[in-house]
Image (cartoon, rainbow, N blue to C red; front, side):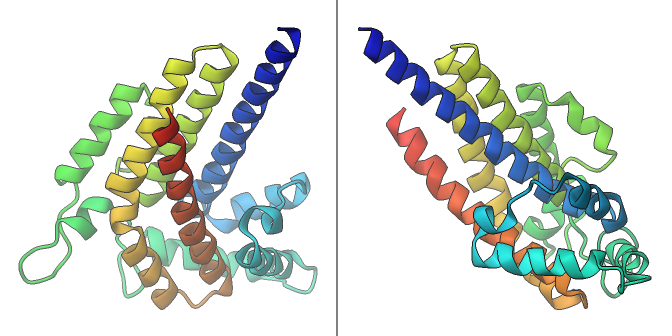
Length: 233
């Protein structure tokens, strides 16, 4: 009996660690789309503990290379240029602007032009945030269906799963996992490919090519993981 208790405890510990590890990845990706590079690149370098290669494989190796190039002493002015690219892609309407909102991609008009902000998908994801108690997302200062905010919501749900596991509330942990699967499949994956492809087309920076690649790979892999995990519950 003692062996079973210890064995079960070890499984729960590993499950909690996996949930928080996945939360960290979602948090990292959300930051890439919500903040200009000068705000997070320097912080990432100081931490020096984020194993991009171990997490993202080959695509992570490319991203690590880009990060090293951006932060090298010989890359003076690189961060400023990346910040300008960030604003052109995500903030300032213009030739490069990606219109990073789910409703704009999924609710296009008959002539193929972008849908309006605050469409049906915006309202739906806002409801899901409220149901899960994710009021922390309000602090991000973006519309609810911004690509980065949706990634941040998955970070929040993963942390909720981890907290529930450590509290011994496995039913609630399962609920958090089902919410993750539903949100990822019903929302993010419904428009992420088109959005990421446009990012690759519009950006002139290798850094954003690498970010798009790791985002694509991780979302697909996590969807497969969640499908298998929730089938077992």
